[in-house]
Amino acid sequence: MTVTEPAASSTAAVPPLAARARTVGGSPVRDILAVTARPEVINFAGGLPAPELFDREGIAAAFHQVLAQVPERALQYSTTEGEPTLRAGLAARISTQGLPTTPDDLLITTGSQQALSLLSTALLDPGDTVLVESPCYLAALQVFGLAGARVVAVPGDDGVDPAALEDLIRRERPKLLYLVPTFQNPTGRTMPTARRAAVASAAARHGLWIVEDDPYGELRYEGERVPWIATHPGAEDRTVLLGSFSKVMAPGLRLGWLRAPGELLRACAVAKQAADLHTPTLNQLAAARYLDVLDAHVAKVRAVYGERRNAMLAGLPEALPDGSSWNRPEGGMFLWARLPDSYDTTALLPQVVKQDVAYVPGAPFYAATPDPSTLRLCFVTQTPEEIGEGLRRLARGLGI
Image (tube, rainbow, N blue to C red; front, side, top):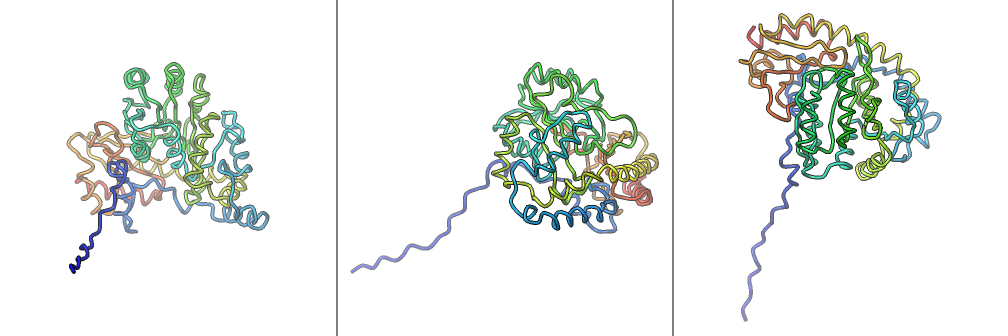
């Protein structure tokens, strides 16, 4: 009788990651923050609100009130669309700022970053074309890349150039245009009213969604408020407005919102059901209470951030090489600089970090050919004194 030996055991490889996960990289900003997390580093790289300005007492009081008065509701599941009290308060706030809004126009999201992901799920099929600014908010490029979209940059200076936009719409037949028109990340620039009107008109004539991301709009230090693109004729039924409490309340609450026409809003709600069911109830209810004092808090934050912006502007002439240029943002968190063509800010970053200071190179923010001489500086996290010292370190790191 022949005894058959058992086959040698073997382990097969698991299936590979999805193609989108293999082709879309991580965030260079997050990577830089990990490298520069040492406390001695003056970090102009992050987009972090100043933690000492968080209203700890006010936010704690809001949480305490909610847990004391409606604990069963605060600790329970909630609706996907968001807590009615927060949506009502937010709708009133948006309406006061010039865009008539009802609670049913809004979806509360887990940070405005989630709103971008939900929109990509609801609107984009692999191969669809998305138009973006040049340079563009980096995390938006990640979202669109994970959706399998073709991302095409629209040239511009103070926002997208209307003539270039018209040409690309005809040639590329995009599904949506993504913009941060007010105090843009990374450049800090603000799109003028006339260009906003031109964008609205182009979207109406050609059939195009506009995604208007506005996380920084309430952080204005000078000048007059510029109305949202969503308020312009032609944009009413095709503009999605995104907002966030991260920069004006606290990013750890992870609260954002999305305002969209009905059919798209419903599609985003379905996508959110599949993502996380709903944004944390307790955080929403506390934020709804805090809305009563938010304006006073934002006024304090604006005053401090304005001084910090001025400190950075005052120190830049001595910190950057001759031939450099930079903007004067009227608000927001970021300043954009361009060094002479001989400088490569990505290659220079390691020697700058040795001086215990950091910035973000501009190259990762470009969907098309990058400008290697550019960099982004965040001016809100440090005090004026720290900004001055950080700029002196930056000058040493650049060899000035």
